[in-house]
Image (cartoon, rainbow, N blue to C red; front, side, top):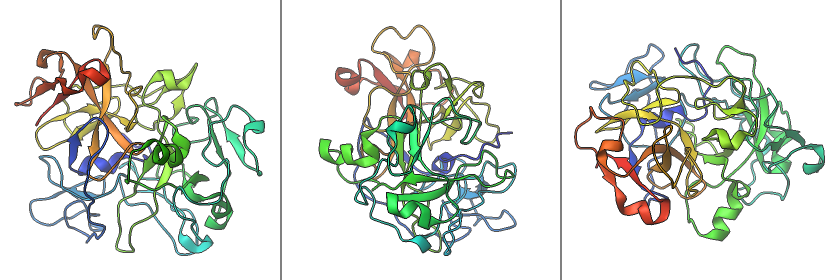
Length: 357
């Protein structure tokens, strides 16, 4: 059973589209307990026709619409204390600090090094610390790819002066809280060069993550470390579940393999799309160098493109990997009908991508 305290997993309850970089329209921010893409009741119940998976009500044939990306709704408090995550055994989400300390606008707060890449203390000014890729500080005993300037926090007031949010980065829902400051960001919007450079410092290993809305409203988006391949992690490996650099990554079925979302055997996570269910992992939209991408031969290992995104997302936001191909025969999921190899992206990416239109 997967119990990593995930940042991204409830995006699995959302409708995802196959595109290489961007999409257009926005989604609703209201959420009623028991409704599709909303939290389950305390007893784990949902409206008729829906099932409770990872504390979200979803259709088992692929999930519904809505904006958000965590296994359970982040716990947000009005006093600024970090949340405690989801229930044991379901892989809860990081809790986010409340607005008590005041939140600057995403991508427009005080100029600071919060969220920048770093190799050591000298790279992080203003009292921030360098959490290195070799550290065992965050999530599954891991460190963020290429480092992340941050600071431990107990209340939102610690992070607000840096343009950040206090987020719980404990590995398991049953672990003690491990709150750190993560940079705020503006999810969605344009994908032009200037907007992309401002979002999460333009990093290709950090994604702007939009938590799901709750009855209290839409929590702020923040920049969360998102390695998608071992090349992001130097001498370590990218863990496909927690998306940080570790010594012993999670194992299981490879990218693109057919999977069962109710019995997830993927190394990363099983995407329950409407027309297909296959293994994937998070990535950062707008960069080709994701998902173990290659422009060369597809003969060794599983290679992919960051080609799955939520409606309304843009470059720099959270995406998901889909397998590269030259023909539909290259797609590992040969069980779900209607699969194709979309070659319209080949000029940009070097290969096509497996899709279920």
